[in-house]
Length: 276
Image (cartoon, rainbow, N blue to C red):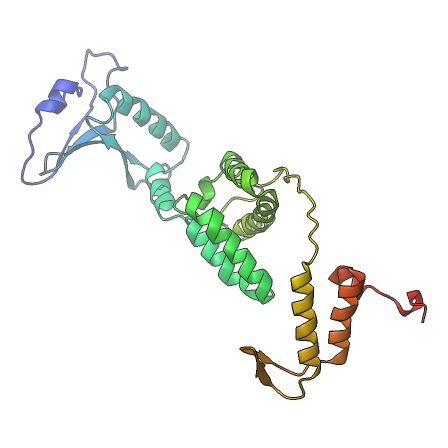
């Protein structure tokens, strides 16, 4: 069979069944012109596709690796790719199997679903809801169709940068949650060990926010505290169902309102600090 040429491939006519024309060596021709194993497959519909056929090293079985469609890639490009893949075959690789494995690999959307199911589901409800929100708001729309193993440091840096422009604090939350997800992806063998694309990513600078309650809010809170204090059995007040509350819980809310401290500071109080 002669070397493949652009004109020869162009002139190939479709038949009732697919057939192949190979790029075999011809005596007296330069070996750089043809690539053994490279062929063109002609389909009944007229499509012509470059591919290589090879034998897997130490196994003897035949392998098949599609390269691309004639007209989209040139014969020279097909020969270059064929040489690259056949070089890998000579080193014991099986590019056809690798391609099939890659096609069936986990996508980022699937990884997010597994992360939410197997990890986030075990967290406190509020944390679980926030983790799921962050992943589905930012990760899935931007990277959902990508293979999880193909996402790199640059991809995550670009995504975090776009979030950081609007909400630096949320960018930091996405960074923390996604880092955990990629760590688990390595344990699940979705990604190779040590490949977390968030390793070394820098946190955004967060601006501290100070917000004081408005007078109308203070009055509404005080009214609600008084109503709950007067509640001895479950009942409805202004459309809200109220349950009897511990006097200690109510007192802690009142103390926080008067002193202006945060919840964590209140929980850390000691009786020794109180001057009765």
